[in-house]
Image 1 (tube, rainbow, N blue to C red):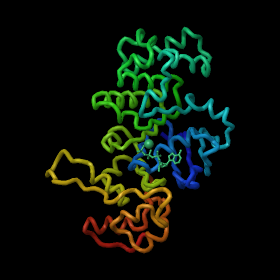
Image 2: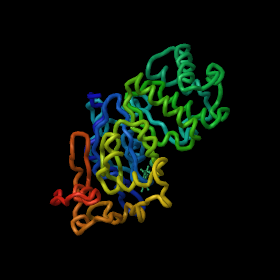
Image 3: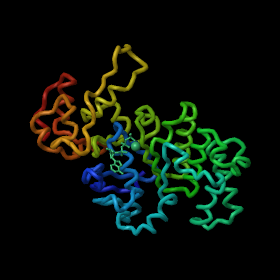
Image 4: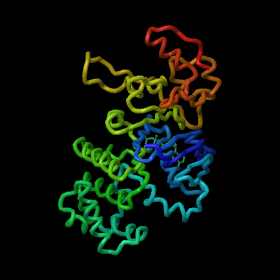
Length: 338
Ligand SMILES: Nc1ncnc2c1ncn2[C@@H]1O[C@H](COP(=O)(O)OP(=O)(O)OP(=O)(O)O)[C@@H](O)[C@H]1O
Ligand SMILES: [Mg+2]
């Protein structure tokens, strides 16, 4: 798990809107390695989808400006002409969306949608491409794939459509898969099957996966590493085990405390993080989380903390996390971490 696949450096995504320029992703840096599954979590509106769609450059170029670097296999995708970018999309980098109908074409059979890119990008004959389509549908657990391959999206159930979309996405064996809440709309048994499938394919194809979700339970089960976003920035990054065992950022600690526990004493109320995420047009001057953080002081209100390396596998964007953890654990209060 050492080969770098994607290296995002200081990415900023600015949208030109009627209300002026809005920066939805602000100084985001991270690396994804081959074969690694990385979770991207955070409350609604924190910039998870904008981050992933920026990597694919899916926004109309006249309404967006990107800053920074998105290096894929060593090339900066932000410098690619649109034509070259289109070749990467759906081939080396693929994306799965929450709503399969938005990415399956209603007027073509499932088989055609899998076979076309294989004929186009991978120079396969029509026969070979259709054989592969049947194989892929079988791989995603669709029953009677040789029959389904000739059907249209509306003929499939919701769960099957999601699988069909995954089959379409995986047809070209992408090096990097971005899955934006791919299972949120599905019932839990199908959700579990899709997650198993993604894990299998990740192992078989050594595909890197960015898995976007609200569901920390899914993250714990599936991911190797996790990035936590808040208001356009990554506030914590860690390997999955230590993120749950020892979260550092007050926001992450709040998110984890709000997960219902199956064991131990039943609490009457789950902890919730108070308040709401501020709007992008009214961002706090200092730490983005300062308006909701019970530990915020003058410095937090005034100065934006950097994403600091805490250890080999952990980064955190908070001025005072060491003191806060020490205080909560009833230990000694160390000098400020600044
Ligand atoms: N095309 C756009 N133009 C202007 N602002 C946008 C655009 N797309 C997204 N935004 C804004 O960027 C912010 C981040 O949105 P994003 O969709 O990335 O959130 P998210 O983390 O994916 O949330 P959710 O969990 O609800 O999917 C939001 O405030 C959103 O309103
Ligand atoms: Mg989203």
